Length: 185
Image 1: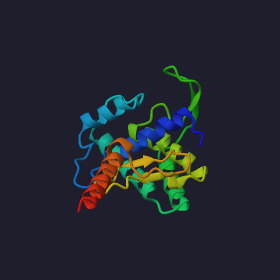
Image 2: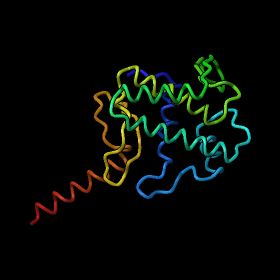
Image 3: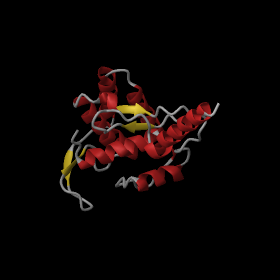
Image 4: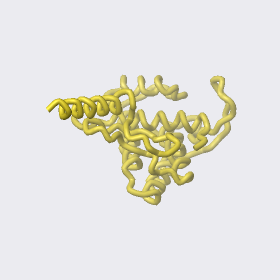
């Protein structure tokens, strides 16, 4: 599956955003403004300006709506959710070449709020996945103690864990140890 650079960046951003939600008793990764500023800096979100509590609540709402898209049972539901989110953001597609990147499309207006910026750019990245018939690539980690979101970009759509280094490795080591214990009985 060929994914343009800007779409890949937006997919990484939406995954990181969804994974800030409090799951399984974890803390909210976007509970305060300092966390929102850090998120914006980590993802090089341009034109953020001064943020307030209203921005924080709006981004948390967008995050919840993205989580619904990852949980959508089928492409039709995912498409409806994406359409609603992107329309509410008031998308204004425009070509741009900034910060050393070649031409790419920004889907948000230059003066958009951070929530509209995320809804438009990340929503369009998810739209790309749905249009490609690949909605099932939007997944949650199968590790019992993790529910992180990820986009399965493996060739055969076989990825099961958010990270093979952490969740995948931990489960494989546990299975190996269980087999060893069973063999020594």
